[in-house]
Length: 378
Image (cartoon, rainbow, N blue to C red):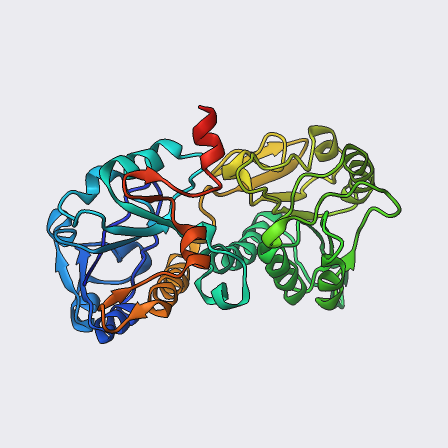
């Protein structure tokens, strides 16, 4: 069993799918590990660190030769897999709804694509969940970046020269990233409030010491999606929420938006008119900017100023914390593959529940149920 890790080729991607820690663990399972030269440099991991852990450090084409499994943060193009064994597994994030051509290319190439972002949100898969591990860091980074852009203090400060008021932070969308954003803003001393379409998050918000801002007494809420994700809201709810947010957002200094719907563009949460209602010098961080954005006018990797408000968003927020993000991502991959390691076979053997959830392609075909309706309608 040979596991290969290539240097990430996506623009701006600084993370890596293997660390010396997880390399040692894979080798202890009996696998051979090969890493492309320079693969870990963006995450502050030198080639010598991999070599000392027992991995082979090789040029790109050599690293993937005879590989049974290729691991990546973002799935490589099929051309980069030349030399891997027929039917080799590729465990990475694929963005399969927006990158359908790549999925089809994997099927045509005979590779078995395993989309880590399709990991089911069940108890036994928590340690394998790359979306959660990366979103956790993204929520933290969003607040730190917003604090830096804000240019004022976060906590209340009592000084001889007078009192500095605490910053008001509003978090929209209370998934993993949102909860970490709340916790980080609270630790920095801000006055924090938050909202979500899922009523179940109210207690989570309050447990972190933040104020829950929710639409009350409106029927038609469809926000309780499967697997812990939000779904689209009813028209009535959208109208009520827009009115509530408009009145609340005008009083805020910092707004963090985190709302995503799998397979669809990010929902629009903040309009230009709402931005105009905010105070001069306020900051919005749009964590969904790479999926179309929650905020009107936000642009990936740019600081946009509208009506005196700064709007910030990164196309790869977790990548701005590359060392920690890589460590967590690599552990997710190890936890995934090692959980199914068959000692007799000397390789992982996936079960139906998780295997069918993450497997996109097999035997030259696209096999994932979440993609088949799209395939059949084109």
